Image (spheres, rainbow, N blue to C red):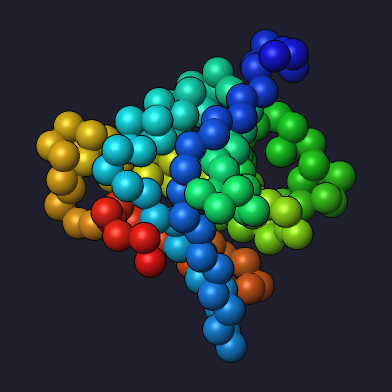
Amino acid sequence: MPQEGGTMKEYMKVPARVKITHYPDEISLRVQLKPTEIQDWCMGLLLLKEKIVISLTFIETNKKEKLKLLLTEDPQITKKAKKGKIPLQSLNNGKVSFEPEETKIYLTPNNLDYLLAFLLQYYKKIIGYVDHVDMEFDDPLGTWVTFEVSEDDE
C-alpha cells in the first residue's frame, strides 16, 4: 500500500452492522459488533491511535455501506478544516459525515480512547460492564453514535 507522510492508508474489511435512523431533532447511528469481531476492531483502533494508519474502513455485512473512522488530529483532517472543507469545530468535538456510499466518523483522541477502552474490556473478559457506549457529536444535526456488542443481527 502506498505511504503518505510516513503513514500507510489502511482499509480493513471487518464486518459491522450499521443502522442510521433519522429523528426530528437528531440522527442516530448504531454500529453493532459481534464478540468475534472485537479483536480486529481493537487492533485497528490501536493502529489509528498510534497513527500507523490514517483511517479505518469497515465494510458492513451487506457490503452496501462503509463506515470510515478518522482521527481529528490527523494532519490531513486539520488541513481540510483550515480550508473550510469540514468545520473547525469538528477538530474539538468530532463529527459524523453522512455520504452516499460511506459514513465518516471523525473521532477526537478522547472519543477514540473511550471506544478502545470499551472494546478492550470485552477482548480481555469476553464480556464488558455494559453492552454499548454512546457518543454525542456537537454538530447541527445532533448526531448520536452507539457502538454495541451483541450476538444478535438486528
